[in-house]
Amino acid sequence: MKFKLISQIAIALLTARLKQSLVAAFGVTFSITMFITLLSFMGGLNDMLDDLILNRTPHIRLYSEILPSPVQPIEQSIHNADAYHFVAHIKPKNELSSIRNSEAIMDALNQDNHVLGFAPKTALPIFYNLGTIHLSGILNGIDIDAESRLFSFQDYVIAGEPIDLKNTPNSLILGIGVANKMLVQIGDMVQITTSEGTPFNLKVVGIFQSGIEELDKVQSYTTIATTQKILGKPASYINDIQVKIFDINMAPALAKQYHTLFDTEAIDIQTANAQFETGSSVRTLISYAVGITLLIVAGFGIYNILNMMIYEKMDSIAILKATGFSGRDVNAIFITIALSIGLIGGALGLLFGLGLSAIIGEIPFNTPSLPTVTTYPINYNPKFYIIGAIFSIITTYLAGYFPSRKASQIDPVDIIRGK
Image (tube, rainbow, N blue to C red; front, side, top):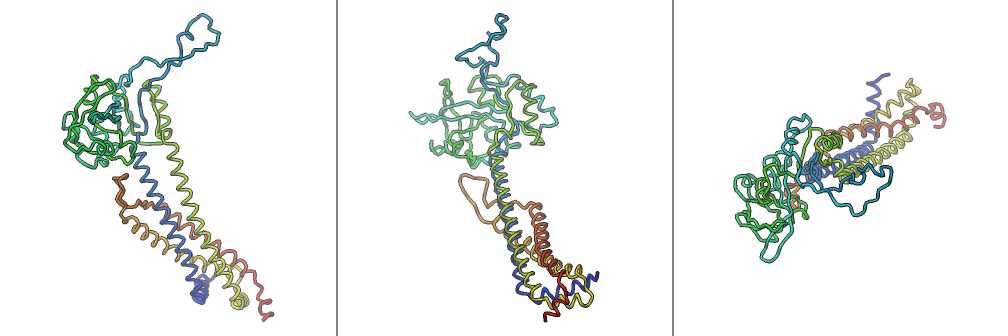
């Protein structure tokens, strides 16, 4: 096959209908541009939501929960062992709300090769005292170093420094919703009362904004030692251990293993956020569906243009076949035309898609509910560009294949006789 000659003929036919060829190339360019931009934006949106929810959520959470005993005393009796027992108004087990052997559990987690790190926490329900008004809330005792390293706690402290929580005794970081209700600022003293009625004064050293309004209205943070002092508990009193592992996909299996091994409740991130992950998958699927639809529409444009070109170039095709070009050669000419349009339009589409994504990524996006987001989110994943390039080639090839097959089957005798 004369590749050089076929290429020259394809270029000649392509330039003979330059306007139509440019329109077809523009259709591919527009489709690829919107495909890249749409996927980049939706990917960035999913990443932003992941950062907001999943990155603030432990992969595995170990905690103590008050539950009724699965085996009642009457069931352990040797008398009437074969009988069915119906026990009404079962009461929960009389157990501590803290995790048993928390120090031994944390030592075991330190030696576990699957564990990236963990952050212990002690939470207690409290009331914020504002004169005669009492606002309900939750005081979280945290290890500030572990929270900052594993959950980017420092990114959500919009006023003050997180390290002040560690350096200042009896201090706390208030949620912005609580701070606005109480009209307090950094340096003010806040009085809290525990559910047992014990009052305690804490100094405000920071303001926290998670982006979830309902949490910011109740949450506040202090050190674990401070919460233990408020409750009058020993240093081993921990009621929550937040674990992050290297491979998030292993979370369900490890959660079951830790539940059995440590005799404590364990929940994995997939179970806790199943609905959220489903939403991300649906958004991504819609983005791909819209982008591929745009490419298919562009392919129909190329198909129509090549059909018109074949109809108008019947004489040229007849002459080519009469001078020794086979149907396979003619097929190759029109497929070369289609792929040329696809490659040029696709390359420009990838370039324009990158540029448009970069422009969108620089547009300011400021909202009080998302303190860590300053511009519209964009994900520059190379996978989007690879998929766009492959689909542009496949679509244009198919759009050129059927018209070229029709051209290769033309009988030059019929065309010349008709003229």
